[in-house]
Length: 447
Image 1: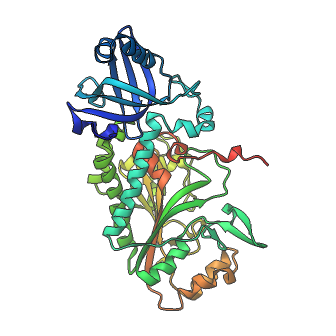
Image 2 (image 1 turned 45 degrees about the vertical axis):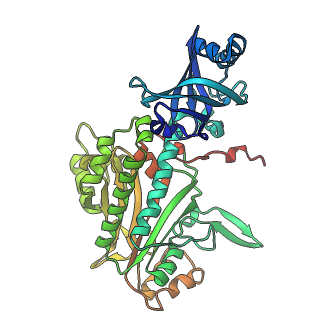
Image 3 (image 1 turned 90 degrees about the vertical axis):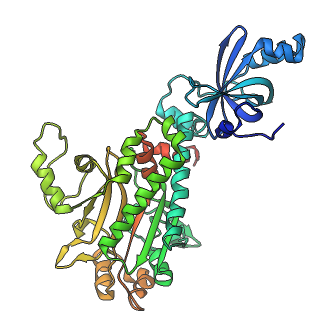
């Protein structure tokens, strides 16, 4: 007898007798036959128990006893099942288990998330259990694939992992978005981004990236925002803005391709339209200037199929504008050179046009919005110092950051990707809260 195998590996064992440790996700049957829907974290599939077979193998008394155990199994009971793997074209998974024995490991009574429909609030309150459902497991498998592909891409392109701190004394972007905490009598903040620290790393190693949790103190309940999420930030030296966009496009295509190649079962479970994902891998991304995008929105704002508000040059986009633009082009779309008035202090101005900065947001189609934001960084010490002051910040808090412009400054650029937004986009899910394991457990903390 082989050791326990995973459900995802059963195609390698057709015709063999195997053992699998699993949980009972659901069951059905009548009379002499019982069907168990099993899961083990890698996949879901069906085991079929036939009462005469148990009687023949174990004798009438023990066989009836074992079959009775199967008939009365409750949802989420953990079991070790033994059986023969068979191909089954009727099954979505393509295989099933002809059950020959079963051992109950841990009973489950009155599991709260039954196969019926439940509201999102109820499911979020029971997130620690909702993770066991087939859709939620598939989303986490997509997340895992994107994480692995991120490390693979940067390793292949000469980057090193450079961890930035979670507690910071500086704001990378808007100070109003910071969570403040006490650091032995001094204020400190949960990091918005590792970018500023990565710039120091880039000046030491050339190409660096980090990947970890960041925080935004925004009371937002939209399907695109979280207060705690995972961000990949990358910084690299001797890159022009256009070369930076090339790198970002290659990275996103690598992520999508990796999921297509290595998490196809998860995408099938989620019923994701993989032809669209293939399109995003194979077709070039669109690059449109901010001002051209405003002109395009104004040109089409009276069309019957548009529902966005009028924008003037200098206004920021809302979600409806981003959705319309990316859907208009049908592929991920870079919006470049936004007004400096609502972008971060460290972005380099467009040569000859100080009202615009060398930056880009990558908008995902199908209504998923911004998934990447990046820019070329300001390299001039005096210019950056003045911009810090203009943003209402204290240059003394950024003395170490300004030092990077004093000692061998070079052209450099970088970008950040929100992992949960990327998961939501690739998985094709409706709400970003499904893309993070525990997005709403803080409500359980009592004052």
